[in-house]
Image 1 (cartoon, one colour):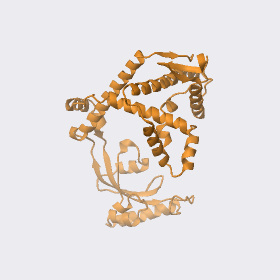
Image 2 (cartoon, rainbow, N blue to C red):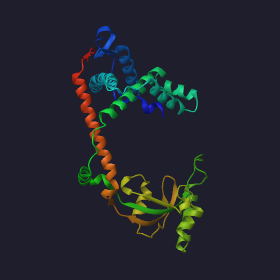
Image 3 (cartoon, rainbow, N blue to C red):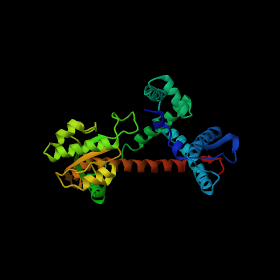
Image 4 (spheres, rainbow, N blue to C red):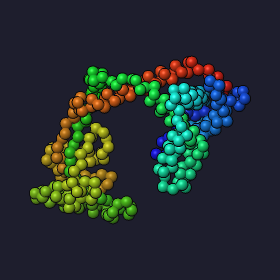
Length: 332
């Protein structure tokens, strides 16, 4: 578990400029008598501000000022919610113990090979170990409270899952796929270290043309792929490569050439891709299909149950907020 995975969502989503109106007693807010230090608030603000600056955000522009003002409110709300969750976890008897926090901290430390790497991660994330412990405490409190509060939320019924399936079949549609075989000859005119051969465009094209001539004489495509292809990912399977043109993850020239073929045909001219020259054979067109309900039933039930729990939990937290004594001292 790496540090960047456990940093609070606030560090990604919110940015606050320097606080105007320091408020009383150097306190950003008071939540049921518990103070949120203005110094901690400002520290978090400055770190997040710098993150956004690195992305080119101009806070002097009108749009930047509007964003800044909106996020000022969000950062304080997030800090208030952290306190409320810790308080509520204590009331519900599910506060994390020191042992819980230490265990999670040790797991994080052990995910690094050396202490130096761990310390560097802290430095890179601009937090101390004490701050990391507080982050862990907040996350464990939130998880414990969520589990306690949502424990009695019923699992979604099969009927609910069926209705969702019928109304969202597009989510369970598998696009058309092309099952191909190919033989690749790499081009490496720049002496790249990540390509195991040095070869000109012309040389690669000539090798591909020689293979096409062998295919025209009746040679077996899969066997030639095993013998000659320079694609390590498919060589041992006789050049097998299945892809969906709709998903756009395959080289455009490769995809276009494969789509132009009928099943059983191969390209009569070498096809240039970003890697080199291919000879491509279309083995099979696998039609688009909708996954049957029985295959996705469990997934849908889990999804609907998770959403129901989250909705119930958010409602619970809003109710806690309404019943709490919250004083905000920061002026926006």
